[in-house]
Length: 318
Image (tube, rainbow, N blue to C red):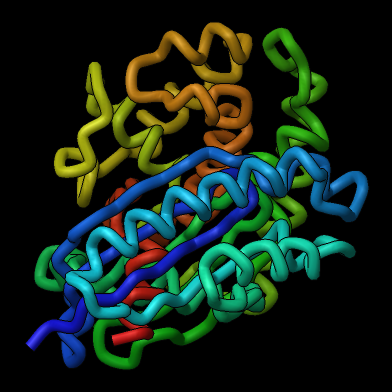
């Protein structure tokens, strides 16, 4: 028998809601509502260490929308809600303002996950629907968020073998190195790539990346690139889910996006306007990871998953 639950994942760039009927033993879920809002909660956090008032206001407005959706889909009976906040909130000096605001709207206190906890939620969500007969273990799951990237190595039997979260997200890399009204220069791209390589080295201290045989990517950067690779005119989650991108395709898309201005990226089909400025930085992160691990993969590609930390949170409730 399934259990209806609500899960919210609040990251650096977006806040997402999942209301689902989850099987308590297998963790498999049937979506009732799945929503996403770009609120850029982590805007400026890397530089200031604080959540900006405007970012908090955008996030609280989304919480009000989600509270209404939860009430309308509860069937008259309160359903369990878990709210997990990630990178931007971990880094902020004034995170109590965020905690108090969310609790006042939704009635639950946000749980600020550690990087390792975030990684484990991501692995659970990403691998529940992965066809294990067609993909070789161990799996390396990478969750490229706005403020951080989680690296999780595991398999279908033992679960997580090793995990590490590093401060390497699309928003953070964009704000550090690529922020401009124009296309980034080669010097900016080179500096960003050097920073990314150092952070991959840090992840490799805890996670044996060379043991990975299948690479699974998730979150908005990877799924957006997946939609571009499929040449979709409009984003289609069903077609994106469990699609494959070769290393060569990611290299081509990354180069194209980094050669554009943020305004030009808005014209690319399937790119959400709220991601247009940071998607080039996210593509550079994915490319660097793929180039690092590709020699050891059975096939030099990434499997794109629409199931991620949000699904892992929902499964943890059930």
